[in-house]
Image (cartoon, rainbow, N blue to C red; front, side):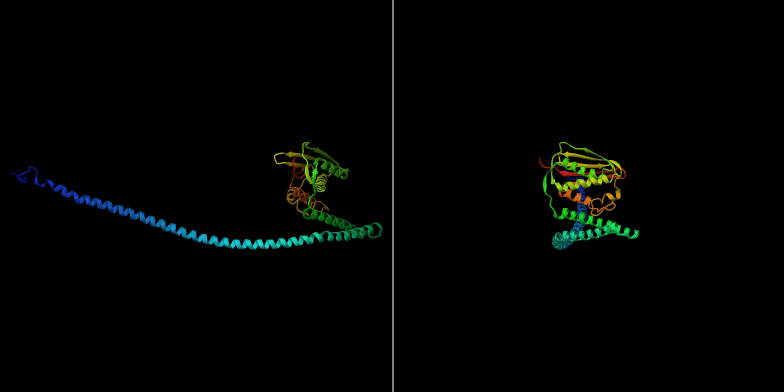
Length: 320
């Protein structure tokens, strides 16, 4: 019988040995896969732990910022409350001063005007009747002129206080075209020596306006006088009117081709006591501005030096 074969089989006796050699190799591969997975999971856990730590740090910073914000909020609330109380006390003081001013201002102004009138009259009388040296007469003339100017200033100041603080408008239905025309006729008498033409471009469909007649007359006579005074000898004043139905607003433009206004002066024009006119009080435009604002309107100025000025007024029309 040949070597390597049993009695009952023709296959070699060592035929089962390869199966025994594969089992350790499979176990080794499984162990390697397991180690790899463990290593991968460990890495992921490490990364997750770092992310969690970073998030935890951010949460702590956010918590700290929130606490600081809450502290700041409490501090600001306390400061705001203190500021409100302070403003309330100041308003009460202002109201008290205003009430006193309502009583004292007219009386004080009346007394000052009386004193100035006496000074002015005595100075004028001395100039006209007295046989005085030229230098003394010149000084008396200065006294007279400045007392007159001070008197006008007090009068304008009283008007300003009355319009801005004390005197509420008395409304009635007004025809602006009629009002503007009458005010121009008054201004025209004072400009007869100059060649100033008045052009009206009136919108015939212009609705009526509810306002205080006396105050609106004051606005337009003042603005027309300003336009006339800007023209030295010969020029044109144009008044345009129009209606904006979508806004229920009346527009009035007063345009002159006079000297114009310097750019550096334009933003000051409505400020009290600002003037570029010799002997002016600087309250005319301030009063106009205050009156128009009382009537829920607006006033703006456009001007170019030596090319003229355009003054625009917008006023709410009476509800039709």
